[in-house]
Length: 281
Ligand code: G3P
Image (cartoon, rainbow, N blue to C red; front, side, top):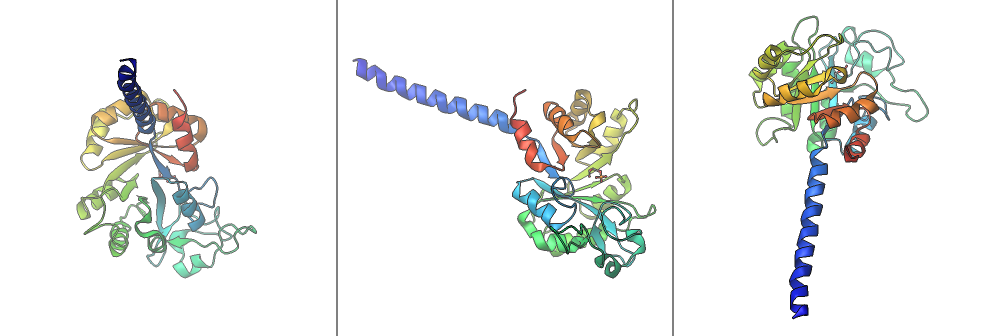
């Protein structure tokens, strides 16, 4: 009789343990925001280079972020600053240089890498194909929209968008609503994120702004200092995502953003997010 009771009891205990484990791992998982490797894993490798993107992929970042700039002769390149001074051994503005001139410049002349060059957007997409997800930032050039068609053409050429493409493989972000609206018109299937940078402590994102962005965008990307629980709630209530970038104190701020349950973070250290998300509280 005792033995007969023992077997069902053991089964119940096993099922309970499995359920508890599954629930807690689900809870932990749900705390992990989408990880966008900011300019690649740029905390470890020179930004916007194959080593930086490769490392981001190895670290299982959900997206690699690519800033677009455009050369004098109309080639899109993966580059953040308008000027090449900070990142290369050259001087001047990308928009005033041809691709051939840019390709002569070296990024990081240290002994680790002797031959790192500025990459065209086409080279990046050709290299990674469908093996990564892309989070791409467009900009205006002197108030003109010159990047959108070229970018979409390259994405189509490599089958990242268009027939057979996976939704979400590409997200386009921009501080320019004009640029996002143009992308929306040309390729309405691509999710868009309106970037906003608010330096002034007293300035708040208004519901009117959120409503306006919701007409064409799927998300808002904002600097962490201005992110509060109230803002997260108001954006998510509008069925939009909130992505956060960091101007300073990335480590401390990341922890705060995870607690606020933002949808994603741009990180120079994509490997750290999962560790932080797994921390309690
Ligand atoms: O890309 C999102 C955010 O990082 C925007 O800032 O200066 O890196 O393009 P920035």
